Each structure stands twice: as C-alpha cells, then as structure tokens.
Image (cartoon, rainbow, N blue to C red; front, side):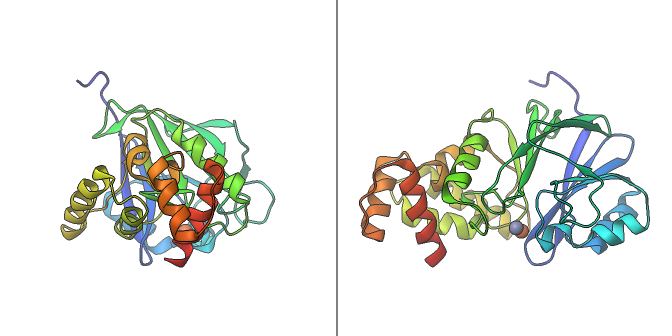
Length: 269
Ligand code: ZN
Ligand code: FE
C-alpha cells in the first residue's frame, strides 16, 4: 500500500565500463548527482531530461567518482558535498559523519564509512522514491558495499571496512542501496563459491542475469537482499566460515577474521 505519493525519481547514468552516476530528481526538474566520474554522460542526461543540476555529492576521492567535477562546476555555480581534507578539488561543503543537509526538498544524512578509502562517505536520503514509495531511505554508498560484494581495501584496515559494512547492514531492511558499480553478476559468482548451500543466491543469480540480459541495471539492491546473499554481511554464518577456513587453510576465531580471509579469497578469485 502506498502511504505517501513519492515525488523523487533516481536514475542511473552509466559511465565508463561499469560505473553508475546516480541522478536524484524531484518533481520540479531539479537534480542532484552522486559521484560524477565523467561530465559528458551527466551533461547528456541533463540535456535529454531538461533537468537542472543543483548540487553534487561525492563519496570518495577516486577518479572514477570525481573526474567530472571540474567540468560540471565550470558551467554552473553549485555546491559540492564530500569528504573533508581539501584533497578533492571542487568540494565546497566538507561533511562529516552525522551531518545532515537538505537539497531539492529532501534531507541527506552523512555516514563516514572508511575501508575502501579512508575518506569514504555515504549519503542516506530520507524521502520515499518512485517506484518504491514505501521505502523511506535510499543509501548512496559509493564503493563500500556492492550488490553481493564489497569494495577492495585500498586504504583502510579490515576492521574499518567490516565496521562500515555492519553499519550499512544495520539500516532498515527496506532501505534501497545505490552502489557505484555494476559488479553484481561477478560478485554472485564468487558468493556462490563461498556459500554453495545458499539457495537465495542461486535464485538471485537467475533474477539478476535476466535483468542484465535485458540491459537493465541490477541496482538498487536492498538491505534485506544483501543480508541474505552478500557474503561480506554474512561472516557470522557457520557454513560460510567453514568454506573460508577450508579454502584459505586458516582457523577462524571471529567474524572479523572470517571477513579478512573472505576478502583475501575474493582478491585472488
Ligand atoms: Zn573507489
Ligand atoms: Fe569506483
């Protein structure tokens, strides 16, 4: 049952080989984009939709998330929200964990989720979005969590990354998650190796393959879906522990250790 008419629409703008630049639009044609690694597809999207770019959100410093900033901001004066530290040229509003701000009629809360990089942020949008009007929250999590996977640990410690993933996993189950890459099918391939007896994974593989065959994105995903199919959120699972332990020839004494060796296994996969 729809309890509130949603006025927001979130559209993936594909960039490079497998990036998604997420465009969040309200009903009056104002739009916020997340992680514009390239300006050209964003300009093409704006020209096609007639929407007006009002602000940019940046999750972390990698070029495939920031590369379009300079060009997009040359053409217009708009705020750019992102990590503090002045290492990302073009950020006008440095934000920290716990901060919140309002843009185009919706509130965004900031979560600091280090691990993939030390500066990594996520933005939690707190408004219903079409066609999921009953979901109140949408998370833009960059390269921290992927559908059935997680980002590589380039800068942070495993402990940081695992804590960040658990924070995502603790959000309401119907929260929609907008990851920055289309990695779902290859992640599921690995997840099935790690958890061969997880029937939800087999079913998900079929569903997501069909979407890709039709040229559709597999995203957004939800917390509910990730909790039952993402091995990096399932380090408490006894059977997953057994698989990781056997494959990596390691005795595992904690969920964190399971995460460490699961991530290492995936890096070699
Ligand atoms: Zn990255
Ligand atoms: Fe990336």
